[in-house]
Length: 215
Length: 227
Image 1: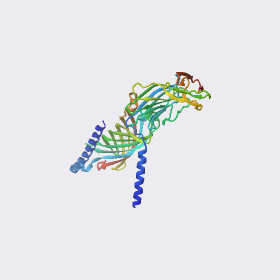
Image 2: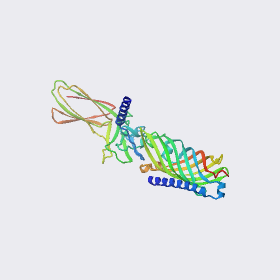
Image 3: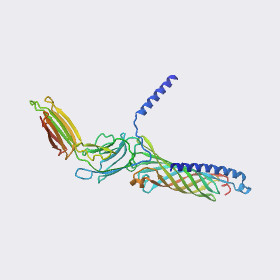
Image 4: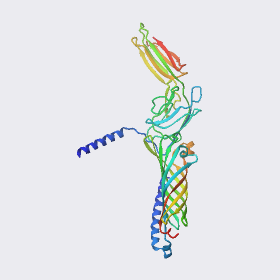
């Protein structure tokens, strides 16, 4: 499963670069009309990331989650359909070691890719993205560190507002599920085989390209 | 310059040695264990607030206490290489009983196994009992005595992850000795469980073995054997 995710991430990365390069080439050969309206290459999101776990799972029942951050690069491929790499992280403190095992804290890192569609209305951008990635819980306790890993999938609508053609702010709720790889007895599977998150992220959106200028 | 380098080298050597001396726990990635069971006294009554600990190399990988019904359900980490031990009513260093009124149970593994479920069933902890057995030498007789004392230890140790393990420690502990005509009086302290018997087998002057069963009816018991 992990290998599949790695392959997928590699493919996503290569396709992102390819599309980005193709976009540059296309820019040079665009018609005059296109030149007048400019081209929307994509955008970068950098912001804070606040997860809230819900449902019957070990994170919701035995951890106090702290905030983190996220960074996403969205490269437009066809019109404003985008694809790109995604990175987020957050921290958590173990509050009930009876339910989790005897360790102190965790740092979650999610690396993956997103696909989606961006819709522009005047100074507002609305988008819907779906993602898949590799999620690592780097745990610390007893003077040692160990990992829990998962495959994460998520769906995230996003609303952003542009101050000027290149800079704006965004807010993006996200529904995320981590399919955990933890080996547990059958009666713990409900709690340890998956974690659900509702997350809120907000921050800066940097628009790439000149396409936002004339809106 | 050379002196500084030598100092640095010495410091590096010391730090490396110190770090190698520590036998740290290596927690297994992506694994949780479930240990469950029930703790009762010898009358079958539930024992609440009894600590249950999983341990490896003296580190508590998981810990909980029994609930009001004596049940426990402990989710534990696992060690990568070292065997897992399970302690009931004893601290993770296996030093002392936590609830001093009751006996303790410790399950020791000989090697690491990839097992994720430990259903311990019903575990009986008896009330603690101490026997002070006095062996008095009545001067004048030239008797020799060889003896063995069989008893159920208050700190019961059982194997874990073996085929068909014993379920209790009944009369599993033994003390032996011999007494000469010149021996001083002795007091032997035995820590066992109320309601159990201590079996004292002795042979006088290499004769037939005689048996005395000493019932442990109280928390503190005494018995005097004279020869």
